[in-house]
Amino acid sequence: MTRPRPKRFYTKVTAEPRPEGIAILLDGKPIRTPGGATLLLPTHDLAEAIAAEWQAQREHIDAQTMPLLRLANTALERIPQTRAGVIVQLLEYGRHDLLCYRAEAPQSLIVHQVEQWQPLLDWISAAYRIALQPTQGIAPVAQSTQSIEALNTLLQALDNFALAGVSAATALTGSIVLALAVRAGRLDASTAFRLAILEEAFQAEHWGVDAEAEARQQRIARELADVVAFLRLADARSP
Image (cartoon, rainbow, N blue to C red; front, side, top):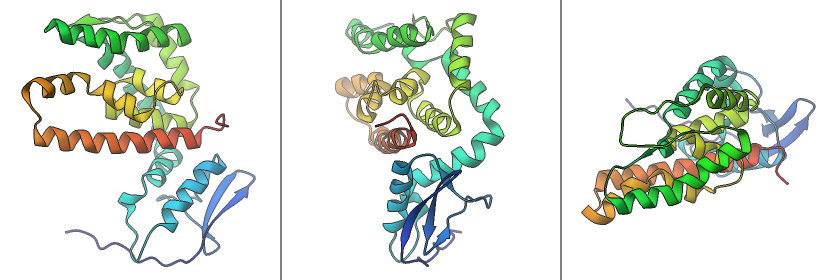
């Protein structure tokens, strides 16, 4: 049974700087996380964007239209409680990253994957000493202990907001490399999405579009755009 959406109960939405972060107020009262803590955000830009999500609600509050709020709640509550496990999962993506597994045929797809994916493997190797080795086919390729340790060091250094965004982007794309490239500002959302579905797009071009697959891809594209926006807005290094 679908739960009824709560009615909008507030008129004014404001952001209030506090010593420990930026709070969002609904008619002067701070928003709280699902666990009951005051929602405190790391940057003014993210606070303003989440305030805009609340302001855009109409007669009823629809949580599905507030992706930035959901990601912020994840960063504030789930990541601190499960941080070690989240990093373990991301390291597994590093051991089996999408960009490392190239097609065995046809040659045109192989060339396309090398042209589009290899520059990102070269980038993460040069930038972070994470040298991931590619292979052809689905047989697992062993990644070096040094590269996985370097990836672990990088992930451990991320704050909870960055880790929440990187985790979400990795799950959506199947690639920790794409997620970290997005976080570093090397890729925008549309490019990361295009690279994530490179083989699917190739198959669709040659064999036609499957309606179910297309709907799934559209959902992933929307969600990835939200995650990339979250990473940009939550990054205190951004201008």
